[in-house]
Every structure is written in structure tokens, then in C-alpha cells.
Length: 271
Image (cartoon, rainbow, N blue to C red; front, side, top):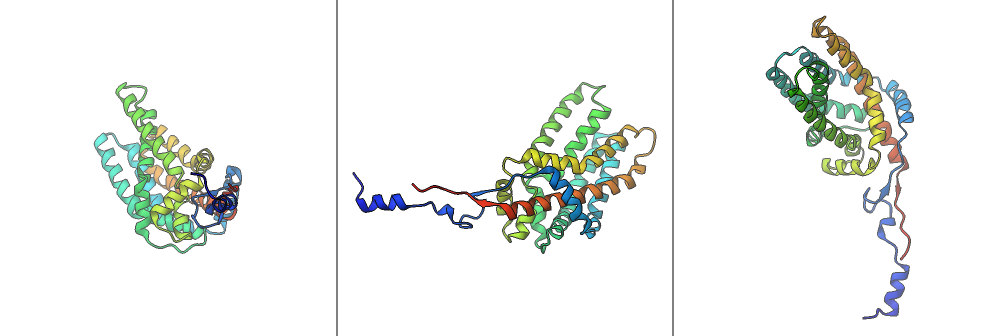
């Protein structure tokens, strides 16, 4: 059935409502590309002007330092499992809320709802990323070359760590979105994926650079574990973990600020 002249005129002049900025929140927005070098450099300036965040990260850094030292010095899968379970619980209850508060401070926001940050960390199993990668390093350094059975454990852990790490890359700025936009946790997680879509490699470069000193310290500690007690590593690991964690939080805060200020609505042509 042919359409009328009036209906044809309506179609000709119609524009998609997504052209209206904010009508569909971030669903139809185009985010700017992240520049890893700028993010790493400018985040140091941001961190220097927000020194109190180092204090906020002390509990989480202590938890991480003790966990790494315990795993390096452990000689039993049972005890490694016990340490990992304790780390998982403490990370969710202590480190996750304080990390969220630190990100909020760096972004000039008012933090609220600590349960939301704990659930957000749990949704993407953030503590398991640390546990899995540490397990990969320990197996590679101590067992991989001697017992063939550990190859299977190495591959399984590497797959788990990689998949979860990639998922966590895309929720790096979810905390800032939750506090800055005053939206619910699930909405913040989904919008973070939209903002960082297609930029996983850039976020990976930023994260790797920020945590590289800690990775080097872990490798060095594991290599020399047989010549000195693992407990000697705790002070060194704690300081480096605090610095790296704070730097990473500053990086994500800079990325959030950059995207929020330069994001544009997707444009549609008329029919």
C-alpha cells in the first residue's frame, strides 16, 4: 500500500532522536582515543597534587605484599590455596572500597556506597586476576622446567588470568562513572565498556607500564627466594605496590576525565 504525501514528507524531514545529546546517555556516543603516553605522564602530575591517596592505598598494598611473600615462600598447594582465599576476601572487603575512594579523590568526586565498589570488584573477579597471574609467575619460575604436570596448570591459569584481565581492562573507569554520574553499579559497568570499547590495547599498555616495577620486584623476589627469607621482601613489595597502585588509579582518573570532557554524540544523517 503506497504511503501518502504527508507521510512521505514526515519521513523526508525525520531525524533520529539519538542526535539529541544525553537522551540515551552514553549508548550512542563516540569516545576519544586514549593516548597511553599522555595518560602515564599527566597522571604523575595528578598524583603529585593528591598525595593523600598513597595513605588510602596502604591497607591494600600491605595485603598484596604479604600475600606475594607468603606465596613465594609456600611449599604446599594447600597453603597457597588458603592464602589465596584469605587474599580474595580481604581484597573485596578492604582494598576494593579504599581503591574506589582513592579514585574518587583523584577525580574530585564524593565517594559513597562502598558496597557498590565491592560488588563491582566481585562482578569481574578482580582479585582472581592477581591470584592467577601470581600463580603463573610462580609456576613458570619454580616448577615449569621440572614437572610436566605443571604445564597443564600453567596453561589453565594463564587462560583464566588473560580472560579476566581483558574483562577488567574495560571496567577500569567504572568507579568514576558510578560516583561522577551518580548512576547504579550495573549502569556504570556497562557504560565503562562503551567508553573504552576498542581501546583494550591502550589500557593494557597503561596498566603494564604502571605495574611494571611491581612485576619486576615479584620476579626478583621469586628468583632469590632460596637465598633469603620471603619476609624480607614485604617492606620492598609494600612500597612498590603502594606507588604502582596509586599511579594506576591516577591513570584511570585521567582517562575518565579525558573521555568525559571530549566524548561526543554520534551523528546521524536524515533519511
